[in-house]
Image 1 (tube, helix red, strand yellow):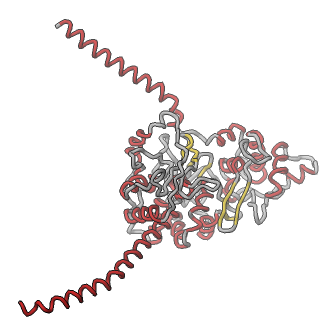
Image 2 (tube, helix red, strand yellow):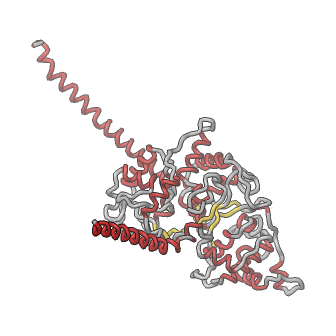
Image 3 (cartoon, rainbow, N blue to C red):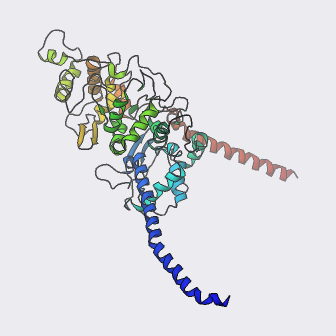
Length: 475
């Protein structure tokens, strides 16, 4: 044993030198792994379209909140999700972050409204949640902007009621691959169901505003807009679209002679889909083309209806038999024809009004909403723009509800589906956010019911107390 002692110092020095040589390499590997995790999180945040709702319009700081989301309950303002410790999520642990994103519960225990699509994000895997946390905490710039608070009317102001809603409708099962499907299909399913949360808009909702799981992707209302059926049905859905058409639409929001993205879909294209790699878009298409078909109210594919019309030119020349909807014709010729052309054929910058899903469907929600709110979609260097013409628009050619009904009917009769008719009341309904679900219609009864319940409880307690006193007096 003593003979080994002189050899220990050289051996110790050798091991120390070896550890020192491995140290920088291990640190470099750890740093590379951290950067890869952050990069993965950046990609996931893009695929989840976080910026669309958490960045205020007109120059708001990225992810600093303040975007107003119109819902049937009222306007919900997005929160600050930068790593600010005063206004954002800077003090969130990874577990608290995951709970907010997937369960809809903030760090302080308050419940989020499902305008934040945590019902879809619940499917995000643990590894991807870790990557998202790394990205938001390490790469997103902290901003102390305090967004406007969401103030909904009673009873929706009681966030605690969302706990009951979650018990009824929140499915917390993480995404699981289907072993009978291809890797591409499963990748597309994960993107569509979890990150891109397609069902949040495209699945109809029940009276309590929960997604109807029996009709996935069969079409649903999104405030004033209608997210159409995107099942594989060849008439009502996208079953008749080619893969190339769908890929082009998801990447650009534009397929001439078929469809143009506006409203929330334009935001999804602009902030998320155009930035995804081609293999992701192809995977989403593979998945969507395999979604079970659900028939709708259309008798023919929406993009197949309509044709060019010479009614504007005939009416301007004062020829016999001119368009009976004189007001609609005059509005169209003065405010629409210069861009969409008198025959409705469009041009390189503005879409055709026939062979257009907005004018050929069995409902005119999106046509009305487009006139009310306009279109703004930026893809790469290409900007698609149409001004808003609604009563509240800043544009000089503001139109009343009656005017919008007239021009909508004119477009439908001459370029789209003439079977659809629109009234000023229909326009007003769209302008007010669309048809209200049952839970909103019943809301005015909540306060009287609460008062009646309180009176009943007080009365019952008073009766019990008086009986006890009476028994005590008799004793």
